[in-house]
Length: 204
Image (cartoon, rainbow, N blue to C red; front, side):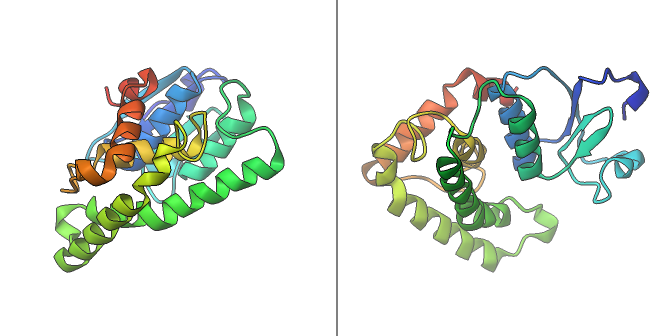
């Protein structure tokens, strides 16, 4: 771990692994065009990670006087502190709508994705099969909504897209194949996300 006294007060430090949540925060930082030091951690978690996060989970985003370890809190902090490259709309009503859509993505899709991305040691095959069918069916059913806007329910890339891109990137890992004839709008949306320079930087 990095000594906090060695970190300039303005420096962002991301402790992350290769999991979904860490990917979301990397993409978020890239979209906000924020400079950060990336400390990539793997299966072995350093003991002093608990000094930053009592749950010892990743990711953790640190500045000298603060350490954040929940994806939504990290997003709100960066969105409020760094006003360039905003990922929420201008008006309170529109921001509330996007936050509610983001909550639905997390509640409906990401909850299923997390079951499928669980470590093999704690993998429940019956639950995973059910989650796979639910997530696959839902993506197929809702694919047409991606035909109306360039991004998720919006003309501009935003917070919902930050949440969705790392999930869609992991469809192969979850053994979910989108049928071309039924999911062309969603597949085209995926392509737009994956071609963004910020996304390419987030998977390096």
